[in-house]
Length: 292
Ligand SMILES: [Zn+2]
Image (cartoon, rainbow, N blue to C red; front, side):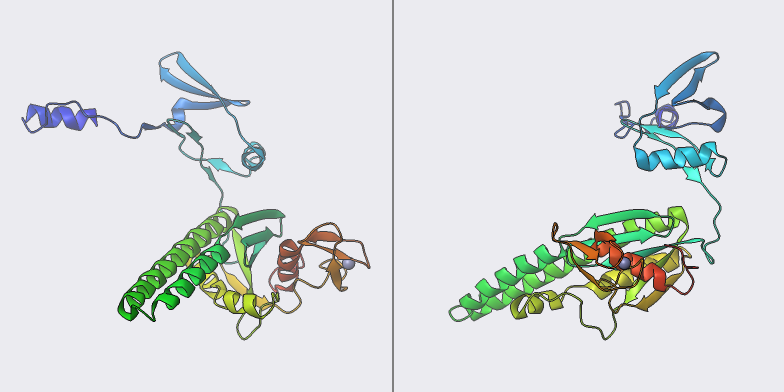
């Protein structure tokens, strides 16, 4: 930045003020950075070092352990105002992945469970968005008796806004899921929703409201982004994915101590229903090699 500013100044083209960096960011040459246990040593000038203590959570710890074991390579380290960014690189065969992630899309979240195993849950407010606009439409419809044109205009405005919010949310969630899949070299398994009634039943009124939930849209965004990144996508039969035990195959029932928990009376296995759905999807993937 300074160099180009000075050059422009010499030519008389620069504004008088010195440039201001809005985002402080520095990328280090690989030769300048060394790891010492949980510290990062950066050479600032000959025999002058800056030592930075690395703080990380359990997610990052896995990468660091993999790297110590020689299964990952470290890319170019960079530093911004609050974080040290250490990219890890791994060569993976994307056309024939070793691990798969099953993605279950439901009314309150998107859950991914991988065969290695690894759980990722993204809470979504799809249902809230739907009911907020449902209420708005209901109110506007009352208005339409007196002011039909205004009502029509408002309906169009809110329906466009709702579509946009849902689309944005679907893109964000799909992006995050595919990023994780790509980083780990996962293939993706999802339930085949075509021609299938959803597995939940909320009664007539709620069902009508939920019917329009964009499960297929979200799936198609995930599929599109996955294929763009060379990740294979498989669709498997969705029947009974959240009512059969992924361990022994017996019928599950609601656990007494939790709304979303299901329990197997036969083998005693108990788990969250969305995770169970994912485990069953993984089991059904013909390319997954029976991992669960
Ligand atoms: Zn069981």
